[in-house]
Image (cartoon, rainbow, N blue to C red; front, side, top):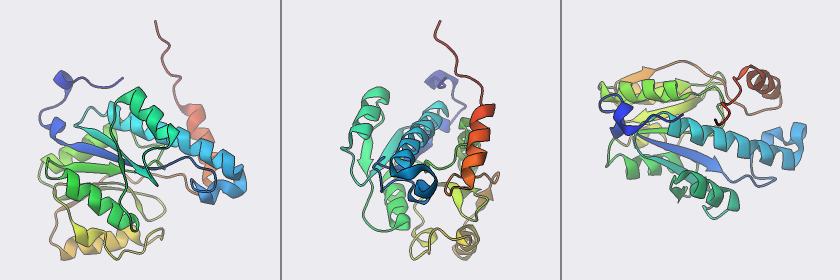
Amino acid sequence: MAIGPDERPAGLHRVQVAVLAKAPVPGLAKTRLIPALGAAGAARLQRQLTRNALQTACDAGLGAVTLWCAPHAQHRFFRALRRATGVPCLVQASGDLGERMHTAFRLHCAQGPLLLIGTDCPPLTPSHLRQAARALLAGDDAVFHPAEDGGYVLVGLRQPQAALFRGMVWSTDAVMAQTRARAATAGLRLRELDTLWDLDVPADLVRWQAWQAQRPAPARPT
């Protein structure tokens, strides 16, 4: 259940959340899982992961939530999410992942701090988002949840920091280490929170299935 405005801890309403998501198109979404699931199965999983990530963002009870869509926001899945949740759907910028993330920070940080997540981290919870938001409000310039594979599953900033994103070689096990070094060079106060796992390759599916089996059943309407 989402937290109402009157229940939010002081200041957390200032911290926005952006979710980056690919459309669930066979052959476009979760391509590294196609050998295990097939193109259609990987697209179905993308739908589920996107719904989960958007629900997590909304349930955190922070500030405004936006869904940044690729390759465009007119896919019927995104239109259905917008109707169901009221969350605005924006189009991801062109360029590599770093350019797309930097664009989101550049546009949002004029209104306040921003947390940015993708859709690939099932264990990310609303509590994780609130903890990251508190770090930014307490004065940290940047906050991250590193990923076990060497990248990260959440980045939060108080101000745009192009140096953290431009010219980065993505999808390697050195991304978080290089980001730490860039933050140090820029003189940023950086906070790292729990390391989490993400769902990228066929070997991750066993963990995903076990995680699903351990989740509490959703409450039934009364």
